Image (tube, rainbow, N blue to C red; front, side, top):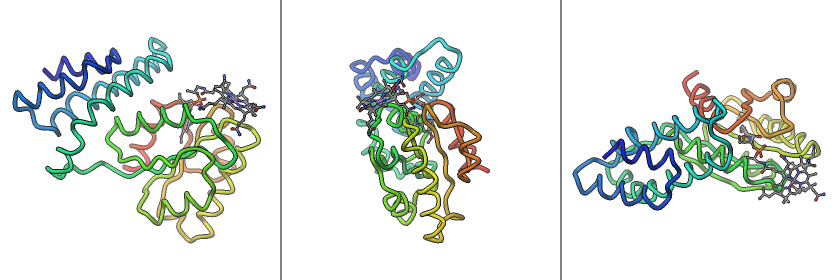
Length: 208
Ligand code: B1M
């Protein structure tokens, strides 16, 4: 049954995943086992297929949505058994920037990796990121798609510094115009090129 769920997620079969998850529960599989041994490994595999050039953004989005359809069923049960997320990420597209798709993909891949996600949406001002750190975010993940909005990543990092919270949080950045050199220049802890790499980066930030 877990193999079947993994296959459906990898294929992005949004209808089949919830049905298979429900069937697994009916057969006695525990919610955390379905999460950790089917949904999360399937998304990891999808990330690998993306990095190998076998999958593109649409396939990755379909898989992420299929996984989320399964998560809808599991979430209340996971809360009941107290399965803890591995960490808390607050993610948003920076102030002035309305591009949503890449940020949402990153959020989905991170959720697939086991993180609790606070998705703050688009056009997120620095003070909202600061508030997220106050609310327990261990990682701030900022996306920007415009060369004109990229500087707001640096402004946000400064705001977090000025609030005296810089040592309480790891900060990662990404988006089409962002580079490692830029991330270094503004004092971010990490940069990733795509959603799958971002999920791996978040894991290593948390462990390092
Ligand atoms: Co706009 N747009 N857009 N746009 N748009 C771009 C970005 C642009 C490159 C198009 C172009 O001119 N060739 C250009 C930017 C130029 C620049 O600054 N260098 C541009 C422009 C100019 C604009 C407007 C200013 C246009 C105008 O009104 N004159 C305007 C700005 C609005 C605003 O934000 N204030 C605008 C508006 C829009 C739409 C609203 C129409 C729409 C967005 C809809 C939406 O998001 N809901 C839109 C779109 C769709 C695009 C393009 C075509 C596609 C962006 C996209 O979704 N890509 C884009 C051209 C292009 O990229 N080819 C373009 C797919 C997505 C999966 O990729 O977001 O790069 P991406 O995310 C990747 C990685 O970057 C990475 O992982 C993701 C998945 O692998 N990543 C991270 C992203 N965030 C990350 C965070 C991380 C790590 C990795 O860690 C935290």
